[in-house]
Image 1 (cartoon, rainbow over the protein chains, first blue to last red):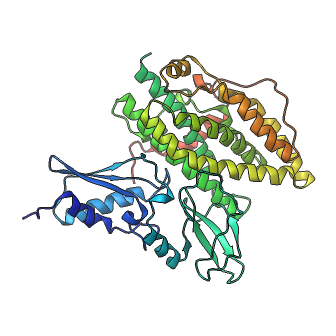
Image 2 (image 1 turned 180 degrees about the vertical axis):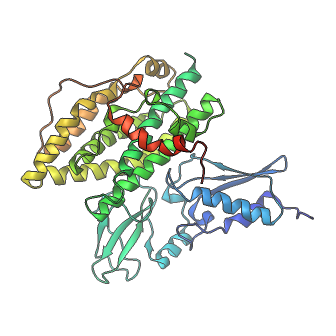
Image 3 (image 1 turned 120 degrees about the vertical axis):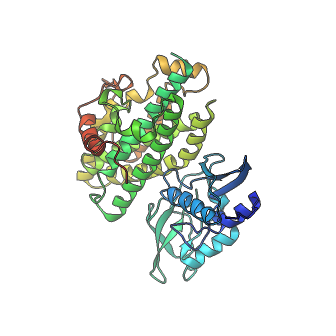
Length: 163
Length: 252
């Protein structure tokens, strides 16, 4: 089997399109989960970082990376998990924030706010843009989300929490 | 005691707090008082299990005896667990669950802020990662303490009872033994003793606002740093370790 000659950049581009298992409209690159690809002694070292410490998607993302590269004949792959620098919502690209909104998830407001989470913060409804929304639950369907409801269109929606 | 041995045991202590609380809170899955709380408590549980995984993995690396984080989680006898006694106390009613969350998350917020400065880069990185989750847990616990304390006569009575019942397990959080001091001198461990006054002030402020009385300092239960536990831990382990004991090496 003839293996294509791929450099680290090619590998990065190949795997950067992997969708997040929980929010399939954005990729692991959009989210800032994919950190780095290095080639050392013909082995590719791929560094990823979890959004939350217990993010259950990590194992699946690792499998998908290996699967995609195996299809290209690349098997010497090591996926490394790093905690530094710690992931924050700053790592989410502007483009991805728009994709989140279109998907029905209110994107995180701004940078990683290291302050306490407060319910006073105004969150715009991703469906009708109304600012008449209220917090239903600080904890939502996944670790990174909180549950809100819009008082105008009455829909409940997720907020991607500032982290 | 070498530095390596000390870091191993220090990391185990931190990891065990996360592991056992993660398990305790997971017991509430599908048993939360309302759906939102069911989600909240299991989300906190998940954060704890994630932290336990990171810490126990590091402990296994430091020990370098070919073990994994799962070996450490599932294959130690009770006396080799070092979680604080507060952690293993039963969920009780919702007030007890929240009082335990309040005591611990206020402590962890202080503790992990210091651990971020540790010279051990892995512990510092895990602290930076986990501190944001702790702040969220803390706000959740404070909200409920205020709501229950400043709620009905019944909710106030129950919250006060929970605060009183768990108080004697709070002193242990600030103990420093030989191992802690040894690592403190190397700028690896956190000096927990001075955190006690800060903790007491924060707790007192929350309880006062919640119209609850802060218990007077009295007898404090201790033992977990030596692996001496209340009877509760054995019950937790018999359930948590069941699968690995019945079917060793089972995977899925």
